[in-house]
Length: 248
Image (cartoon, rainbow, N blue to C red; front, side, top):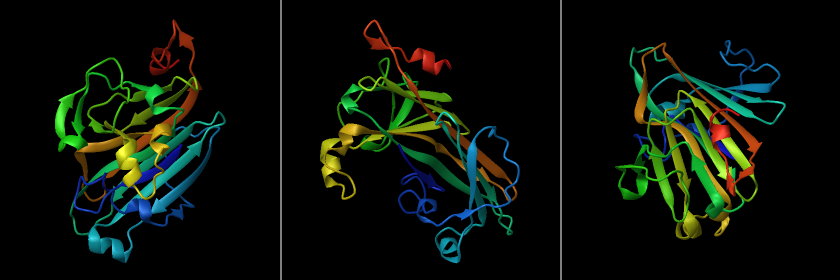
């Protein structure tokens, strides 16, 4: 699993370059963070902080503090908690979109299904962000996909039939979910992507995209994502994700 932070802008949803700038900056270890309202008992964690440089303010003229806590549990579960505060001294609010860019390693994309997004509305980036409603019982993959699902549940499951493994995403403050796989033609056109790597990955991102987050000076936003991997078992020839979605 690979994680990057597309923060202060998701993709081209804003005025900045693709995915914004926070993902390309050096962060500092936050030695004295304010209390985090998250349960990090029995978890190893590190606190990071990002503040704008002089160059950053030239492309995005706002002052902010972005704090990120990365916590790892004894069972391998990973928790990411982001806090973004408007520290503008000129009284101006600012707006941003956000996504945790999480790539998941899968055995075979054609054997993977995603539960929790069925019947939801989505914006299709392959069709000029036109809005559709998802059909079917679960998401399966036979071609390129680049969708933003709206008003999603707090829990999403990625079921890998061949590995008999389920990735579970639990999120808070992140109402949307992005699902992406470039498939063969786009993979071959990407310089940093192997021609066949699309077969063994799936990107499912917890995000806040449809409605940008707006903060007045002094206000703070928080978004949290917890990732875990659990074994899946067959039931009548099919994996049963409902136990996962219901918290089993």
